Every structure is written in C-alpha cells, then in structure tokens.
Image (cartoon, rainbow, N blue to C red; front, side, top):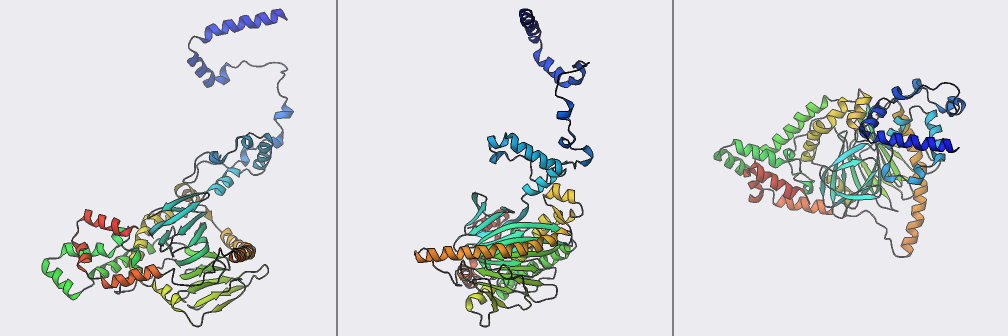
Length: 503
C-alpha cells in the first residue's frame, strides 16, 4: 500500500513539472484532439455497464427528431426561462426525469415549446390621447404612438382618454375612456386572420379594413380629438401644405375666400390610391371573437360598437348589413349553446345575466352619439393604408411559407385547425364566463352593501370629451391660427404635430 501511495505522489510531482510549461496550449490540444490522444481501452473495463446507459427507452432515435433550426422572431435560441427559474426546481432530478420522459414521447417537443412560449405581435398604438397603460403579466408601462401590443397584454385607458390601435392584419379598434381590453390571441391562416379579445369594461369600436373606395365626404372629421396623427403624411394639414407650396399668392387668396376643400379632395384621393395598391395583397379575411362578461360577439368582415359596464348590461350595434358581413351573438349559460345571427344594423341590449337579449326600439342619445364619433375618420383611414404597406404587406407575402412566417415575423401558420380552435373557444368561453359572471355578481353585491361600488349605467362618459373637442373644432375650423399651418417649414410642421398630436 505504501508503494502505491509513493508511486502516486511521485507521478503527481512529475506531472506538475510539465503542466507549468504551456498549460493553455495543452488544454487546447486536449479539448481539440480528445478523440486522438485517449488511449485505446482493451479487455474488460469496470465502467458503467451497457445495459444501464444504453437502454432503448432512454434514447431518441435520430430519424424521429424534428430539428429546431432557428427560433421565431423575437425568441432567443435558449428555451430556458432564466428570469423565472427556481434553482432548486431546475436542479431537481425527479423533474428532469419526468420532463425527459415527455420529451422522448414527443420528438417535436422543442417546436411545441417554442409555440407555447411565443407571444405573437398583435398590433401597435396608432394614437393615444390621454393616459394609456399596458399590463404585461405583473409589469405595467405607459404606452403611446408605435408602442407594441402582444398576445396576453391588457390595455387600460384613463378618464377622458381615447386610443386607436392598429392590428397587424390592418383592422382598427377604438377604445373609449375608462376601458379595459385584453388581447388574447391573433392567428394567421392563408384565408383568415382570427383575433380573440376580451372587453372587461368600457367602449370598443371594431373596424376591419374594407377594400371599397372611401366616399367623397367634405364635412369635418368627427373624431377630431385624435388629430393631428403622428403619422404626419396622413393629416389634412400635410395636403394643405403641399397645395400652398405649389400655388402663387393669387391662387391662395382665391381658395381661402371660396373656402375650397382641395386638401380634403387630395387626402381622399390618396386613400383610394393606396387602397388600390393594398388590395393586390389579398389580405386574409378579418374575424374577431369579442368577449364581454355577459355576451360574446363573433364577427366576420363587419364593424360594430360594444359597450359594457361591470355588473350591468351590454349594448352593441352592427354598423352595416351588406352581403358577406357576419355578426353572431353567443349568450351565457352552461347548456345554452344557441347562436343568434344579427342581420340588422340596429342597437341591441344584452341583459346583465347574459341569458337574454333584445332589440333597442327607442335609441337614446348616448347611443346615437356613440355612432357619430367614428362616422367620418378619413385621416385614420389614410394612416391605416400607409401602415398596411409598411407593416402588414411583408407578413401577407410570407403566408405561403410557414418557416419564413415564423422566423421573419414570429407567427404560427394555421390551417384547417383554425376553425376547430374558434369552435372550441366559443364553447370554452361560454362556460368560463358563465362561472365568472356568477362570481362577479356575488362580489359586486358585497361591495355595494359596503358602499364601495356604484352600479354604472350607460352615460356620456365614453363620448363627452370627444364630442366637446369636435364642437369646439367647428368654431375654429377656419381660424388664422390653423391656416398658418400651411406656411410652416418641414421642421415647424413636425414640431406642430408632436405638440398637438400627443397628450
């Protein structure tokens, strides 16, 4: 035994002498030529037996592996969630064994995990007049023009705040004051784009893109509170400046005296010009499932308004009754799977329990004014067409290649499973919201008993600020202050937009 210990000690001294010389080079040689310098093992070896480390059920056959070559846009290569990782859980051998078992049964587990972790890009803030707050998990942030909205995000608007949101398929939504909406899903297929949204409270206007020409309307824009937009080429002032720069003094005076609307004509002409260009994209049909606590609207190619207050009734209206425009209503109840087709462009009321609905025979002023807010929005429409070419066109062009759609834009490609997904969501949502409605009713009754909750009914809160701004704008439409915008330089015009187009 002493000889064995002495021999080991002597050998270690011998090795230490040689390690001092070019240690780094030796390590590199060992790492790079490991297979060459290892001695060939002969005879019976006392290593791990083959039956322990080469069991068939412990190995994944190479032919069954689906390669995860490149992550989706916005994803890291590593699938480990380092920010939320618990060290003890991460090092648990029991968890590793159970996960290993699942991975061996699903050769495509990496692709499935990437799909599950990917929060797809839903849209961007086009305009926010006031305070808009976005909640992403436990984090929140104030958002403004160009802010990103992803799946799972929840957007809140403050009092007297109005927001327009551009969705990545070209659809628009308008949020009124004190509105809470969550963007739960966006699913692209060759033929359709499906959105799943949930309105917790407030007012929302859903407005998909239409390929038809924009009509010649010269009356003032009704949603003036959002003007000017930070998309500066969309504003009427941009066209006024172009006309002013191309005219002489005499022509300018004549146009001012006659109150001609050449800028509006040019603005509408630009909308229709871009519509013709964007129509060649053949954008998939827009479908949406808009969930409120007491009712769900499923729409295809049609605009609608929806108002809901917690614990109260909901009101909605289909904006048109043209061919190809569909709107379905799903009520609440565990066994009530009836679907109601809404054919008329009229206001409807959904009961607070979600079990009944009725047509509003006498439309109150609050509902009539709600329609007025979005009746003439040519600047918003032009901004949509500009962003269609900038943001939506590249996605549509990649729909033919699922890999390109994932790697370049971060979207999954849906096929026949999309309709199955919609059918499942209709049934699942009806059951879940029925339970939620009962729980919410109990909570609100307790809060009301303690004086902590006042039942809200439909009022002027969702349109008061917008209407006041619109009426004031009519009085100052041709003031000298506004006419001076035509004479501004590029820098002055940019500063004017930033000053008046934000809060």
